[in-house]
Image (tube, rainbow, N blue to C red; front, top):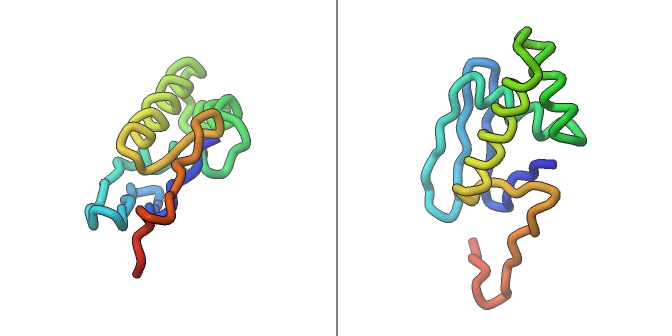
Length: 100
């Protein structure tokens, strides 16, 4: 399933959301749909479960919900803000760790 990377902090609502990346200090803003998808990805145990709940909640076809789930997860992963259960967790090396 989807996990937010260490140092990335989501602020999610039904009206939209944002993720703060501590490393860059930048915010990534999410549309209401992307925010809802991310909430489902974080709360469900599988992408299939998240897609089924998205389809039911918004009365959309299951294929469309699954495509939305894949797109949002892939985008967040590509931006380095999250990783999936099948993706290896980013490793922190002690010499590269940031200190507060």
